[in-house]
Image 1 (cartoon, rainbow, N blue to C red):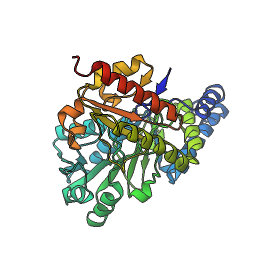
Image 2: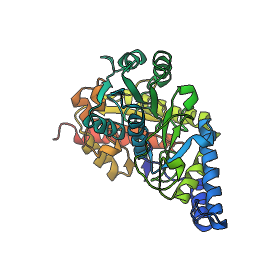
Image 3: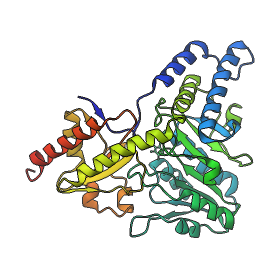
Image 4: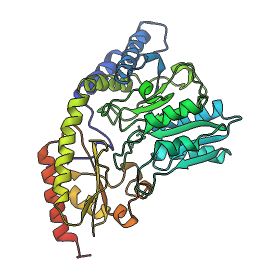
Length: 378
Ligand code: PMP
């Protein structure tokens, strides 16, 4: 049996992606910067992919910079904007529930002497737009806030926060890590009032190693690397045409089915929530109005790692908090008000449209078995 319920960690490359990558490897292997036919063939494929991803975001293709993934996009956005706008305005604002790549970028800014303000959710575990907006002042050059939390699926009030900040402090650059929302919920940088927005390929049935950064027209960034002229000099280095082509094809394939997929996985999430609620000692931790793709819960008396191994033996793949932390606690669950004990006993289930109701049943059967066999026997 193989039940994959870890799509927030990564997804299986789709057929459209594999076909586009294979085609690009065969026919688009040139250097997109070369001024000859072979180069032109490669450039056609990156242009097409840029158009496909732009269509999925409802933005101009010219606003997209290809990168090696969301980690790089986040660093380029945060460090690049701080370097461009933060000479006099030394305050930067983010939240306490961000992905490690955003946390890391702000840690580097703190080392450079920026005043880093990290806004936490309230005692009820809800992060409020007013609190984010209130942290921004005249001295602030940048705010960064994720759209969907990768550990709980909580949807953050990006649109409200960014609109408020835009009204009161129009000079502030607004960045959103939209990795767990892209092609799952409607994501439009314009509607979110985002100047910069990060997406990643491997969360949307493309390959690992490719991502993009939306950069609103007129927004300046200081690149992390200096080199060639590629990607408007913001990301020098020869583009990986096959990875980019695969990303574009995956986006094009998923774009038309967003609502139908969200409804379908929402049904799976509801079924899982219902079955878990009937189990003793199980507490659902995700907010009811969170992303339909993610469900976080804790199982009393069982540690995440023990459960992960037990489930893995049965061919069921889920995650503890987030895959990136490899079992290590990121502290984000506690920020959402989850007690350390429950955080240690947390499993994160994340869906894609390939999952079935049988996957949910298999997981719940295995969890009941784990409770019978493993609880109180330690
Ligand atoms: N941001 C979020 C919210 C994520 O979930 C992830 C992946 N776990 C990343 C950034 C990093 O993405 P990548 O693997 O493309 O660097």
